[in-house]
Length: 145
Figure 1 (tube, one colour):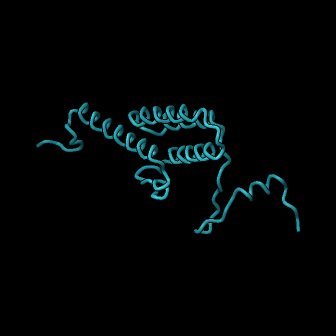
Figure 2 (tube, rainbow, N blue to C red):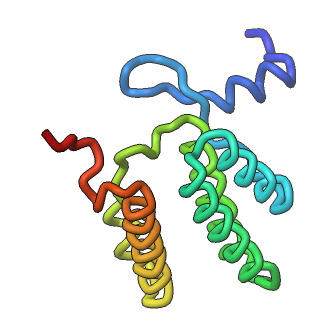
Figure 3 (cartoon, rainbow, N blue to C red):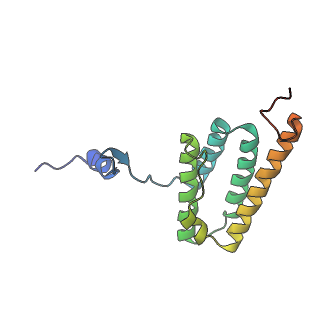
């Protein structure tokens, strides 16, 4: 049997067989924090509407600032993995209409649940402010006859 060339071996290892008998890429290597941070901001700029981009940028900056001094490798890997998955979803527009995974929510700490609640409130607040600025009183898409 022939040995695979190193690059072919790596390529083959990066692919997994999916349920629909197609080839899909496996998990990607984690990006270093600064590259991931920049990728997230670029993805927001390219793929999100202005209001969502502003909120998303604020959140990304705050989270990366808060995790700047974390020393636990397991925590860092989890943090970077989740943000990298988020970047992939934003870039592929697969986040639209997606709900949070129940398993991930159950694993969240009280502090994380509180942050999620604050994020939800900020999104709702910006949504109502946008409706008021548009002058439609929250009834967008309806015309008066």
